[in-house]
Amino acid sequence: MSSTLPGADVRGFYRALGIELAGWARREASVACFAAPDRHARGDRDPSCSVNVDTGAWHCWGCGARGGAYDAALARGRSPREAIDLMVTHGLTTRRNEVSVADAPLLLKPLAARDV
Image 1: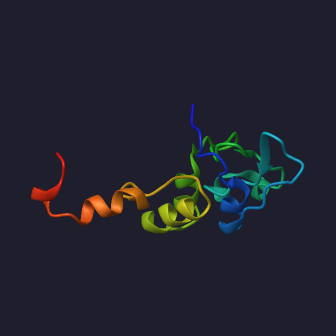
Image 2: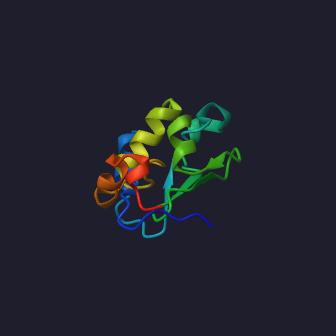
């Protein structure tokens, strides 16, 4: 099961991708397929894709495409770097090498001066 960080803005993330999630949706929001719209009859006028508004995971029941928030960004034409930046902006993930302010003085000390 996927989960996001507390306070993540899944709706804002998808809005930034040009995908509006219905405000009334509590758990799953139905949207037109954004991963492979050409593979749907009638242009997917009856939305066949659902997005979990808690985790950002999505699944298209029509064509079978699925993934997480990162995959959605890639499907909308974002580069891997842009996808991660967008996820960080909306609180869906953090950067791997983020340093807390409390650790910063320790990192500035020469190695010999550290209490190892």
